[in-house]
Structures are given as structure tokens and as C-alpha cells.
Amino acid sequence: MQVLIDIKNLDLFYGEFQALKKVSMSIPEKAITAFIGPSGCGKSTLLRTLNRMNDMIPGTRIEGSIRVGDTDIYGSDVDVETLRKKVGMVFQQPNPFPKSIYDNVAYGPRLHGVTKKHELDEIVEKSLRSAALWDEVKDHLKRSALSISGGQQQRLCIARALAVNPDVLLMDEATSALDPISTLKIEELAQELKDRYTIVMVTHNMHQAARVSNQTVFFLNGEVIEYADTEKLFSNPTDQRTEDYISGRFG
Amino acid sequence: MKPRTVDKIATGIIMAVAGFIILLLAGFLSYIIIRGFGHISFDFLTSPPQTFREGGGIGPQLFNSLFLLVLTMIITIPLGLGAGIYMSEYAKPGRLTDFIRLTVEVLSSFPSIVVGLFGLLVFVNVFEFGFSLFSGALALTVFNLPLMVRITEQGLRSVPREQKEASLALGISKWKTITSVMLPMAVPVILTGTILASGRVFGEAAALLFTAGMSSPRLDFTNWNPLDPTSPLNPFRPAETLAVHIWKINSEGVAPDAREIAAGASAVLVMTVLSFNLIARWLGRMVYRKFTSSR
Ligand SMILES: Nc1ncnc2c1ncn2[C@@H]1O[C@H](COP(=O)(O)OP(=O)(O)O)[C@@H](O)[C@H]1O
Ligand SMILES: [Mg+2]
Image (cartoon, rainbow over all chains, first blue to last red):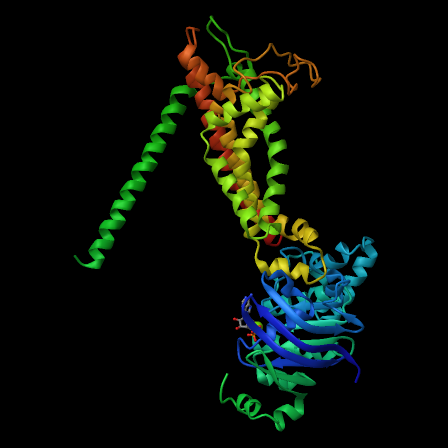
């Protein structure tokens, strides 16, 4: 499998506090990689370095390197906006804009310069289809995005992210605010999307990682403890701490 | 005493104080309105004042107040929005930002008569705008800007961080995120605040005595050329506003019906400001609903 994201010796500090310690890993293209570990171990922090959303937090400092494709994303010549177009993100709480369903999906392409109505229509339909939402909303695209259910809102947010044509989709506990049925739908969706996108998901739910991911990374206190194929990590972990965690002895 | 008794007594006292304030306000408002209401007529609202005879109106003053309000807002809103956006989204925490914030706070606590004298010195004399609507509008801007900045900041801060992040994560620039996600969501707060600020401007007298002046040239309401000295739209003419007019006839009015005119004008002023407040609430709610829920 081709490597798309290559992280080398990454340290991240929030002021004095070191949240990531010498993290290194290679994330393969067109597969699902899951980050697991107890709360506060740095999963979200690492995920948010991949689209540089940590830039906004004052006092954050980074050492080491992250390459996405051929680009060193913390290099001086990198345009953060271009990076974020390529590396999309879905958040823990569904966060659609208080606009119509259509306008939510069209938002990204519109602001990136697509103006023709028929092009936008096409992008909106394609994205909603990819997010497995089209059939449910196609008859009321003008309705407020806040009027649909939480699970639908989260798929709308996925559609919104897909509409700017990313290569990577980051999902930070994207199902933790949803009911089991909606969760299942998003897991199925992730399975379909991995043929076209590289997916990195944070989950607090080991069973979810076991169900959907190809690779799993286990974190503890800002360090990578173990990184392996999901099947291997869950059936035959190398590290004692991984074993303790997946057998539910802590976390 | 039992905590429950204490709780009851404290609640009772607070309710009594609140009730007293409400009664005081209601009494005050109804006194002004009832006393002046009888004097309000279409003629009163449209005809010019009389110095010595009975039957003068407040037409030009009412117009001046409204026009001055518009002028002030044309200057205040862009400045206030700009500074508010800067303070809430761009300013890095530090000495300079703290200093700006302090200045804004101090500015907003100035007595308005001091702002008026500052206006006289700076806008009227140094910049030679004379006693004019323009000088008045600038003085009111000084007076109003801190409020406007704070309103904008408050509006932007009321936007959930998740909304901002959603846009940034799509690769949308910060500026476009502000203009296309954050400002629209902040509109209800900003709008409500702006209208409330307008009420303050509308009722202001002290800051205008020495800036917009206490006289009005003879206005020709058929002349809409803003550059002509007799045109009501000329921003460089002196202009007595309603609030200033009330102050003036109360202190030196010689027309036989001066008291009635002052009462009528006060009622008009109070009712206008009151309606600003009601409109602000109603409009804020409506816009909020429009932005957040389905049609
Ligand atoms: N903005 C921040 N400033 C300071 N510390 C932070 C910030 N965000 C997260 N942290 C700390 O960094 C550590 C990792 O947080 P996070 O990446 O959110 O963990 P996880 O997603 O695994 O639960 C935690 O100890 C957390 O308290
Ligand atoms: Mg997290």
C-alpha cells in the first residue's frame, strides 16, 4: 500500500505542556486508520496537526515533520488554505451552518470560486450521494440544515467536506454524539469512502476501530505505543499496555 | 435563621427593589408621555418653531435629529465593525490590545459634555467644520464608537467556535470565514445593539450643544441638493436637534406656549427612543429566527 501521510519525530507543545512525544508513523492511502487510546492522550491533537487546525491555538509549538504526499505541510512555502482543501475534517458534534442543506454543501465550492448554478448543483448532488444522504434530502434541499436529525447532520457535514474535493478525510469522534443506528450508517459510509479517500478517524470506542479500520494506532500520554494492522493489534498485540487497554483493564 | 427564611427575605427585598424601579420608570415615562401627548399633532411635528408667538412646531428639529442619526451611523457602523472585527479576531493578546481596550473603555465613560467640548475644539475649530451636522456626527461617533466596537466583538464572540472551525477546515480564509459565516450569525446581536445605540444618539443633547450648534438656518424642504446651504440635506449646516431644542426652550423659551412645546417634544423624543428599543428587540428576534431555523 502506498503511504500518503508520513509523520516523523513529531513533538507538539501547548505552551509548557508536551501533548505529543516523538510521534512517527506512516498512514497508507485509501484506507482507514484509527487512533485509539484513553481520553487526553493526544489523539485529537495529532489529528488536528494534519490540517493545521492547531495553528489557531496561541502558544502551540511543533517540532518534527509531517508530509502529505510530496508536501512538508509545516514548510514555509505551504498555503494552509490549499492544505485544508486537500485534508478535510469532520468534527465530534455535527456542526452544519444555519443555512439550507444545499447552501451547506455549496458553501466550500462557492467560496473557492465556483459560481455557475449547474456546476454547483452537480457538486451538491454528487457530494450528498457520496455521503449517502441524497435520497433522504433531495426533495427539500432548501430546508434548514438544522431541521434534519443529528445523524443526517453529520452526514451533511461529511458531504460538505467532500464538496471541496479532498484526498484525506479526518474524523474526530464523528459518531460519539450519535445514536447506534446513525453510528452504524456512518461506519458503513466510511467503508465505502475509503475506496476513494484516505480516512483517519479518532475514536474512543475500540469496537468501532476493530469494526471499520484497516490500521490502528494506540496512544498513551502523547506517545504511540503500538501501530499495526487492526486485526493484528486486536488479536495479538505486542505491547502489554495495548493488551491491557483493549481488554478493558483501563481507559 | 433558617436558610429558607433568609432566601425568602432576600428574594422579597430584590423583588421589592425591582418593582420599585419598574414603577419609577413606568411613572416617569407615562408622566412625560401623558403630559405631552395632547400637544402632538401632524402640524406640531411638521411646522417650524416660533420664537415669540404661539403654535410653533418641531419639524426641522425632528428632521435634524433623524438626519444626524443617519449621518452618525454612516460613520460609526463601518468604523465600529472594523475595529470590533479586529479586536475579536485579529488582535493578539498583549500590551497593545490591552491598551486599545482600556482606551475604548475610558472613551465610553466620558461625560457627553466633555465629548462635546472635545468636538468643539477638534472638529469645529481645528478642522474648521464649524457648527455643523458633520461636527455633531463626529462628536457622536466618539461617543458611540466604543459601544459599537463592543457590540461587534460581542456579536462575533457569540458565534460558536465549531461554526468558525467548520469553515476554516474547508480551506476558507479567515477573512471570508468572518464575512460569510460569523458576521451573518452575529447580525442579530449587532443589529439589536446598533439600534439601542441609535436610541442613545437620538436623545443626546450635551455633546451636540457645541458641535451641531443650537440654531437651524431657514430650511427649504423642497431643495434636496446636499451642497446648497438652505437644503435640509446639507451636512455642513448648523442644526439644532430635538433634544437640544427641548433643553433650549426649557431654559430660555419665550413663546407663550413654551412649556407645552417642551412637553410635546419630550413626549415625541421618549416615544421615538422607546420604539427604537421595541424595534430592536423585535428585529433581532426575527433575524435570529430567519438565520437559524427553517422557512
Ligand atoms: N488548547 C489546548 N491547550 C492546552 N492543552 C491542551 C489543549 N488542547 C488539548 N490539550 C491537552 O493536550 C492533551 C491531549 O488532548 P487531546 O488531543 O484533545 O486528547 P484526546 O483527543 O486524545 O482526548 C490533553 O492533556 C489536553 O488537556
Ligand atoms: Mg479528542
